[in-house]
Length: 235
Image (cartoon, rainbow, N blue to C red):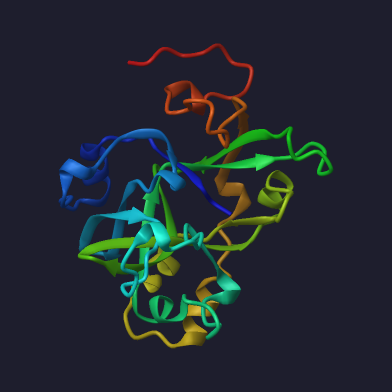
């Protein structure tokens, strides 16, 4: 699963990194912890020449009242993308995008029999500034909304997210570019969902507890500090 991401870079860094203008600048927010359940706007690419802001939580176009839409659509499991009993297949076939973030959080349970106690872990790219996560999107009432695709966890991320052993689909290079190509067939799309970002290119470490708690404000610079380090001051 992937319910919390970080975008610690400002919009100017984003524009410079991808050499593209950003539409809807008024919706862009730099945050250390984006909670998907708050339905934030995140930077998205639908082609190598476009950079926009889409809202997290996919809503199908036929939904009239979002409050009455009870499904959790923050994530879409890769093996269900073309299951005709699920809602995903039309979006997986025609509406694929890349969600850009500087890292994401996962819970780790030292004791799987005690789900009340967990550690918060942060994962970020070791060499790059941004992750590009495979996602699918729907246009609802004129607003683009997305779900992040998840896949089976790698050995590293499976050891961290040990309850469920899932991770976001992180793409790079040709795999990232291919995800945005229109007209791919189902087999080509599914092949991309098995792309495994190398564990050796990830930095993963424990951070302050409580990232997955609604009782704690974790939109703070120190949420990205390794656990036990002195708290750094906001700039």
